[in-house]
Image (cartoon, rainbow, N blue to C red):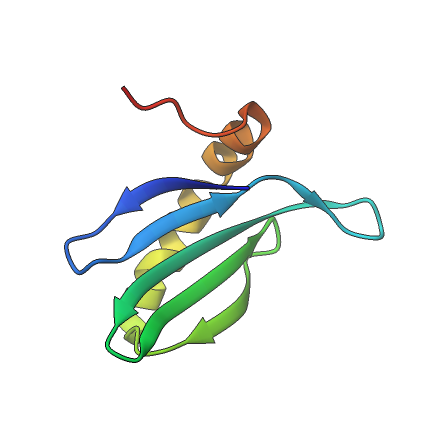
Length: 91
């Protein structure tokens, strides 16, 4: 399951996953930024808590990727909190 948390003017949508578990038992969340293009999507995926970029595809600029990674780092507790709650309640 994924939960939307942001929409950007360029069409990028930010979503975060529910909490997954690795074979080691460690929990993780994946934060995905995706923007539609004429040929598919620009995609950038970061995994928490390691902050590892696990997928880069398309044409996000280095500056955009830097901003996404900064947002993920600053919001890591937010993502875990709301993943545990089953998403965001937006009125």
